[in-house]
Image (cartoon, rainbow, N blue to C red; front, top):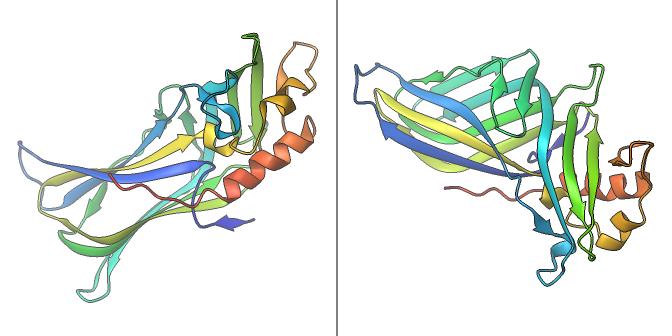
Length: 228
């Protein structure tokens, strides 16, 4: 198993959005985990002037473990939530099955918040299966399917202090942007890619492996965290 400093399984964005509860205030702060997905078309290889683009609009990402931690050594504050079961993320909507319940945080100021996600690799299909469309320079569209299967662990950290008050509700948001994983892939490479019998460009360890290696390296190098 390989541990990367940041998921993504993509360019990941991690943000904390908070709001005060107007109803009966809970003695603890509640923090939920939300997944957002980017499914808009993006130019290939970062060239804004190109007419070729790539977009992923559906599929699934299956996790085998979700861990949420917060700590403050000075005040001896610590919270840990760990879910060891398969969680399927619907890429089209960001919804999870089963739903991930909110985590109860003891009110206080935390110096570190961390989300750790592990991909499931023992199922009947790859942990990541995303379906999309490659549009070439002539405007012709080609169906694409990306498959990634590995029990890699990814970590998303929220640096800097954050304070949770009694009854406060907050959401930790992780964003998956697969077009960022394909940043090193050119339109020429996709145009030359082989298709299966259904006319789909499958990118996996066994099909179009050269492109797959570039994308896999993109996953490893996705190390920026955006805080909103």
